[in-house]
Picture 1 (tube, one colour):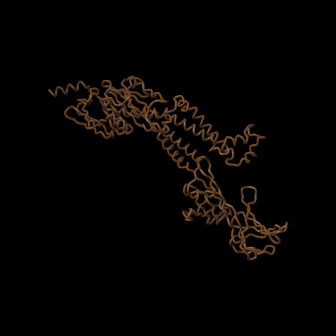
Picture 2 (tube, helix red, strand yellow):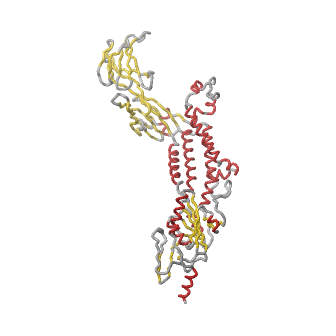
Picture 3 (spheres, rainbow, N blue to C red):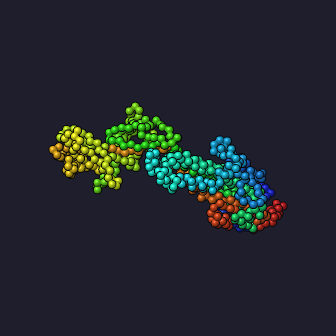
Length: 564
């Protein structure tokens, strides 16, 4: 601990601080900080006591990120940058210069690259061009149908009638545009953009942060007056200014007659965080495109399927897991309807079994309510009509397979046929049954005339051409989509980190310099954003700095007379 007495300065550079003769009045209610200000009034003198903690050079290196509200007083030179000229914010030589960081990892890779290569990769127009190319490839991926068979592209993009006069199926299959987001061109552009972001971070953002963390004492009044903001206090103490700045949240450093203060250093780290977030998003997208599995299946109620038989790899990073051996059993499939008769929702009751036949999970899924197990997600996406179970002349039950029929629009229609008479006849006739969903069946006779409508499980018989029919049950099929996507958590983490660092980037990094020149204090400062607010803040703080109304020499003579 060090106590500073204005009448006996601890360093030859610190100016003596004096106030009016009695009654002295000090208004310091605006200061909120750890050091305590004590006003001691004895006769006609006043002492200002500041409690400070002296930091060593090692402590500064360890805690230069910790804004702890302390004024540092030092007679010895700490690791600072002393400048007598302009502080224009320029950083030293960027690419290839020495710095912290190990030889491994992305930074180690950047350090091994030549300066000329780093300069090209960190070029802003190049990065913007890369993003435009990636956006164009993504748009092209939405125009070209993905994952189709080669025959599909032969027909849609024939060589006889090329799109735009040159674009045919050869372009699509050669460049891998039928799987755009896992194609070498798309992944190569992502890798190039990621390399540009790392190069920009290494050559520009990291050096800027290192410069911002240094103590930049300005030792000339001309350098301070050249800052974006500057002012002069004709009669003030630089120590009083330091206390005021510290109360406003600044980290304050004093060295002789010079003062340096800053706050909002976290804003300087935000661009690095934004770059890291973008790299996470691109890495997650690459992992999704080249390391996932996808597949779809339509399963009738009561049947099983194995997950690994449905899922297919999407790229060279796709690796199956133990969960691929899981067997899925469709216990029940059913639907709900609106009052108008339209389907409102459909459900699948699924059970999952391991290799030993033990049920490990059971859940009823629906649209927007999937099942997740072992990194595999099962979605309810579609439905179909599998079979119609009937009794014929009280015999059966018989399962009649329902086939989808083509109709205009997106409405579904299914039909089946019950032969009557000689089934081996070339002109076999029978009863036709049509259904749009699982709740009602429309029946027609051998001549194609409407006979009636029956609901499954109603047990109501209907007589058609001498055949008695009862609709026992309508067996539906569930349409399921399965996928594994290891890139989802990485993408979510990247977007979360991007939002956080974007908010941090709005923090202003403000710097203030001051120099004691006799009884005057010359103050200058700058901020990387919100410059008008910064100027108003500094003006308000300077208005609170106490004014010195007696010279140091006159008050020293008073103390000398009293001592005699």
